[in-house]
Structures are given as C-alpha cells and as structure tokens.
Length: 378
Image (cartoon, rainbow, N blue to C red; front, side):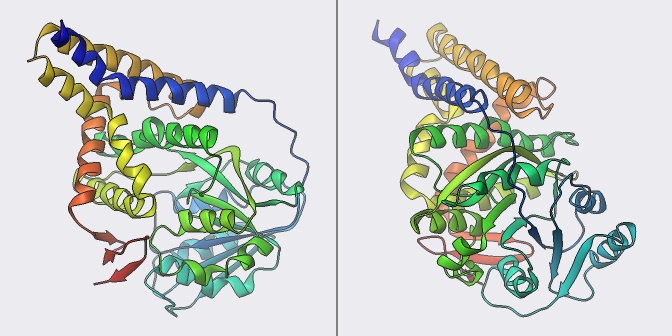
C-alpha cells in the first residue's frame, strides 16, 4: 500500500506549486487596473554591444511610442568599431525628429561592462525617469504609458516588466523561450503574492532618478553580474516601493545551438544561486522532472509510478497552456508542448550544475562569481 502512495507524494510539491502559480497569475492578471495617466518625460538608456536579431526594429519600437511627453534615447557603446553603430546611425536617419544620442566611451568602471556603459552614458540623461532596457528588447506602442503610470505615486522607485519570446526559431531557441513561460513568469507571480516585489527583471526597468541616487547610482551595481536583481533589491531595501508592469516586452531571439543556450542558462542559474541562495536551493523540490523520476524509482517503475508521473505532466501541461495562451500570449504552446519534459530536464540539469562551479561566461568574458553575487574577471 505504501508503494502505491509514495509516488503520488513525491509529485505533490511540483503539482501544488503549479496550481498555486496559476492561482496567483489569475489573481494578478484579473485584478482591476487603473488607467494610465502619469506621463512624465523619460530617458531610455540602452547599453549595446554587437548586433542582435532584428536590432533596427527593436530600437525603432522605442521611437514609435504613443506618448505625449518628451522621450530621449541614449545608446551606450564601448567601441567605435562596434557593428551596432551603423544600425544606430540608420535609426537616427529614419527618425530625424527623435531625440537620439550615441555615447561611445570605452572607460571601464568594474567587471560588469554593461553597467560601465550605463555609467558612461548617464551624464547625458536629461529626464528624471530613467528606463534601462536591453538591446534585444522590442516593445508595443503603449509601453511608455504603462511603465510610467505607477510613478504617479511618489513612493514608487522602480517599475519592472515581464518579458516573453514569441516567434521562436528552432528547438534549441524554443527550449530557452519556454523558460519564460513555464518558470520565470510563474515564479514571479508566486513571489509577488507571497512576499511582494523585492527585485527587478533586467529586460526593461524604469527607475526614478531620486531612487537611483539613493543607492549610489549605477556605480553601486558595477561589481555584480545580476545588476538587474541588485538594482531592484537595493532600491527596495532603501525604502522605495517596486511595481510590476502589466505591459510585456518581447525578447527577440535568433536561432542558436544547444551549447549556447546551455551556457546562458547556466550563467543565469549560478547568478540566482548566489543572489538568493536559500530560495534557490529550496526551488529544487518544485522541479517537475526530478520529482517525476523519483516517483518512478520509489515505485520500482510500477503502474503507480507511471500514473503519478502522468498526472504531474497532465496538470503541468494544462498550467503552461493557460499561462501561454491566457496570460502571456507568446504563442509557444501548444506548438512546443512536446518539448516540455525535455525543458524540465534541461532546467533541472542547469539547476544542479549551478552548484558544481562558480565560473560563468558572459559576452566572451570569463568571470568567477563570489558569494553575494559580485564577480571577478578571469
């Protein structure tokens, strides 16, 4: 009798977590939202290096905003020979009326070269609302209205945005894009419900100049790999409130091989392990793939074990379908649903490997992660 019960007990944590994340998402996305009304002038800082998939269209989406106040876009690049510079020049020609600047400065302020670019460009920022946005991000025309609206409350110091990746190309890219749908967004929904928002997501972050100054500005982030997490967490600990925007931004991915995806996923995992060690370690019991395997092992691969694993993945498939179709709108599922067990196995492998070392590769540079999230270049 016990052998019949143990497999179902093993899959209970990921089953429960999936249902809880769905309930949290329904609560968040189903709430009554105030109409956007606060529209202060904004400066968009874009640190760039190299050309991403659809770079010109990504950049242009920030110049097509339906926004009544002044908008300044400042690109920050470290080298005059960077191939992204002609793309930015083309953008300036396509939008001659837009307030667009390019800062080329190779000054290094610490091991995080992205933050060094931000430090170099920040003196050119004209406005009190600062948006830091990755170069591979594309936004809808209402993006600025949505992220600026919460700043009507003077206690709000930062607004961060969820992201998705529609239109993925190839199975390897789909494995990475699925992570936003089946892990990142559900995890944020649960964290938001249980503890409130105490971190930022790096795709797009909007920060009040006063809140940024309160933590020491961008120099306070230059020694960390997870500058997005640190920016949000430091502003939270400084007494400001963080808000999550309803407006998704799109992370535009190009076709990559599995090795490149694995390297990036492992970097993210090791970064989160040192940034939130307790929560990251505890997240292991909510991983579906190892719990399904444990159910099979405990049952001796009997019918009860297969039944528990099947129940887990039937519920999981329903949860991710609802997230994808109803809340996120990325179009990944049901097309890539057959990859879900492989994505879960991939997620568990990178979670486990994150404990096996402290080195990460980022933009061609090798770093060693220190406790607390700081990095040293090797």
